[in-house]
Image (cartoon, rainbow, N blue to C red):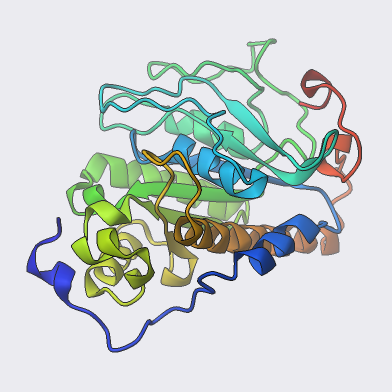
Length: 302
């Protein structure tokens, strides 16, 4: 549970969260309309870190009810997510939010998703439902799942590394190298990068008793600083959250952290889209599903 350091606290929170003011944060997300394309957010990270649970948690907060669209396994046995999957979040009867999440197979020391496949996904070359093979990388010869001519909408706009707070100190050199390799490719493409630190309630009794202690607890800040040093993501791009896991009803404090992380992801991604626009990127082809208009069937825009 984090040992004696879990009980050390700062005299005041070192980061501000609008606890209980979720309506204004929720409205901010609902009102978001990118000036260019919608956002494609790619989640990656070690197996079992909570990528799929984060997708479900975001959906739950935005829809105001518990959602379980992204399948999650309560086991550490292998990779549960096997294929490249896109998740849209419904906003109205026939409309969707102007951002999507892509979930992929997790990273492991010896198996898991190929780093080269993640790099292809960043560039928009991986099509929906491609099943990852730890032993080989997607080939241009694969006419079914290799996208030879990706549009700006096919490409990733924000790369999110999801890490279990319990495993930061135990992260192997091999996993660190893979994350670093992926980050370097994203940096070459100027794709902004964010980290989500999950399961924070399991590493600190003070947070388990009261989630609002998250930014007053020394142990959590130490975990964030350790993660920053290991993977190179700056502190102001790391967001601790508790995903919905065992709950069957929404919780205002869980929502606050999820919304804080989501708002920052949106802002960071929107800055990237505006930068691409100012650079004169003419390959933008936003699909109707990325606008606040009726969306066509899923297969038509993917």
